[in-house]
Image (cartoon, rainbow, N blue to C red):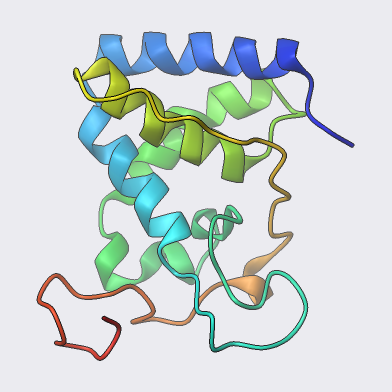
Length: 142
């Protein structure tokens, strides 16, 4: 079922207030990237086995991957927004928080599509090391 405009608007307002109050934009950009950056086009199988923006970062073992150090704090900050807007997926909340952080910091408006479906458990977490390293070619990811 598609998420309502009202639910998305409510989540956006709450995310904007959180970012401005807590000055937490950078960690929100990071949580959005780390949730989505695990996509692997070489993994076959049904969704969500290839990773990507599926909200799986909230589960152990993915949240405990070395590259995700500290991101539990972003998830904890966003949890009340998810509780207040249960029809908005974690995946959408993480991506919205990232995009809104960029815009509120003076960056461009990022057009987003919503309606992502959440991964439903830790069995769908991406494997450790599935994010590209910062150095080009260092782990063969790009």
